[in-house]
Figure 1 (cartoon, rainbow, N blue to C red):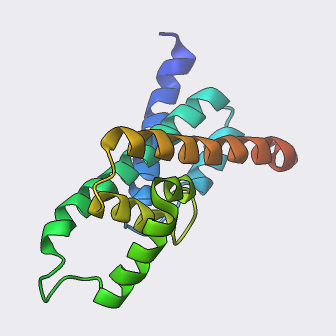
Figure 2 (tube, rainbow, N blue to C red):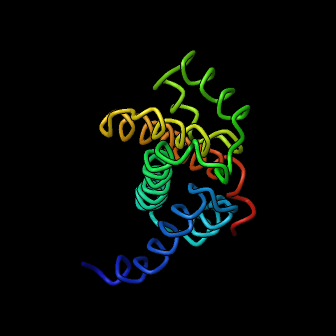
Amino acid sequence: MNEVALLSLPALSSLAVISLASATLLPGGSEAAFAGLWCQGHAPWALWIAATLGNTLGSLINVALGRGARRLRTRRWFPVSRRALARGTLWYRRFGAWSLLLSWAPLIGDPLTVLAGIFRLAWWKSIVLIVIAKGGRYALLLLAADLWLTPWCQ
């Protein structure tokens, strides 16, 4: 491993952790860290892998939480109202697994991954669809950075 790769490892690890946290139900976003590291000259492919991997793992945590929540949804203290769960159920029944292609989207992405867990979507389908969505998002961010951030990163 060369010196540049070793120097990038802490930054890329941080990006992966930030991306993971931003994909869970915790508030936050990874775009600023992603753009900052891009401006510092880190390899685009390495940024894409770190961010996609971290964000995908965060979404899979949501899927696992949904699988666990399925058993608890009848409890009085369950944090999602029956009405909200019914609305999510209708959405999921209408679009099914394909709705995970929107898992990249703010506000709706996290609940969709939880619903995939509640409805016990196969792990392999969850992984494939989430990787496509998250990888596509970060590929578009790389394109946007290349088009618009280059003058600001000098």
